[in-house]
Image (cartoon, rainbow, N blue to C red):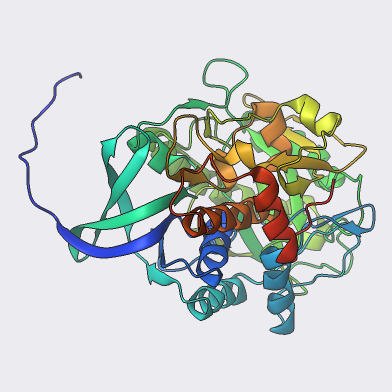
Length: 441
């Protein structure tokens, strides 16, 4: 159906005027907002749910990786401050050599909100960005939002898109593409769930402590593959781990899959409906397949399906797999990564994992869409090919990119409101270093 309707023009009340609007309160977004506000920027953070954390809390994705590489810390700054604060409130385990950090979802929600509040960030929950108003290409003057109070506009000098799906980039008319190796072949979506009543004392691979290990449960995979349900169902792993839970007797389970695009509402709807039905069939079978799960029960399913990849900006620099496997000493390095290149197959239950030999660098230019005057991205929309993003996409790296974006717009403000491509990347890197971020080459 190609029919259209004309929406009558209307006046929208201006709700606020700020220096920076951060769209999306997930791992990159709440860190970006803290970074900008701590450096004096009047910052507004917009989040669609009633809590912060995005994929970590709404989708139950855990643990948070990757903070360490071969015993050395590669992500510091605000992201590490956050997980240290979680640990102080009994909400995380931060001493695993791998740098994977399992966490308690409810503590995550509370500490993220408290850190945002303490930084002086204004926060609008239950709010979605629905449009951008531009007076000239590449420069967003107003962000239009909708919530229970109606439709409003926010005047802003800078926008950081941390929606994970590039929603603001699309509305601003900036260049983007879907990450895919072939037509519609994005990594599948997964709906995570949590089990209680698990014999975690005897269940192997629940703790992702070491590097270079595939942590899926081999016994369960073999048993599930040989079951009638497993032969019919698209699945992954299975991973039964301390991820978004740290309590004895509980595990986060990652094994469902749905092929489709997290940027397509029809695919999202179908994934939510299908995967909850899949979980209802999986859980009883798990009790039969592993003795450690005999007494297990479903605690909850995630608020939303987990999305691995959708849109990438066309950036001033787009990361490639060569940048992951053969690290470059970018002078504008603003974050580091070391997670394997982890590709969940679209049409079957396979997983392609390539462990890397050295930590790599991500440049500031990968956060700036081509043609952008005042829009940066953090996290999931970073400029990267599908293979490169298969490593970058994890939460600690998204947090680090959020801190970089928030710091960069603060520098732009200090330089008189310059375009996002104008501050020297080396200056952004230096400021990040002064804040405790790890950006050595």
